[in-house]
Image (cartoon, rainbow, N blue to C red; front, side, top):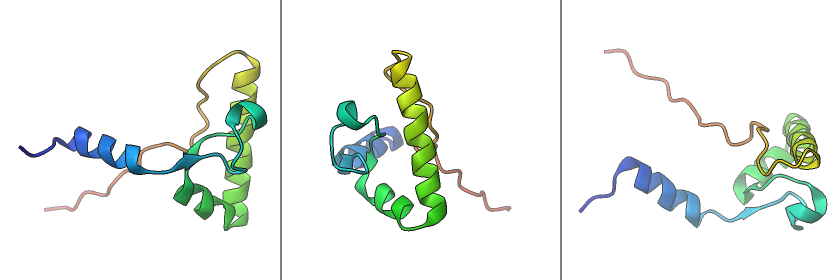
Length: 85
């Protein structure tokens, strides 16, 4: 039986190695968790480092307010362009 699209997505998501940019626990640093590949991409450019720093700032602010989750924008879904028929 084939997996549904949502099941394939979850399977892919769980196989990824998630970590913080520093490699330390988020509870110690206040950093966001993201897949290692994404962190590597973000750290490779000045714009990416700026985006990562902004996400960490939002995460720390939310944590200070007692929130478990922060809307920092790193995990937004990519939109695919549809081909015109």
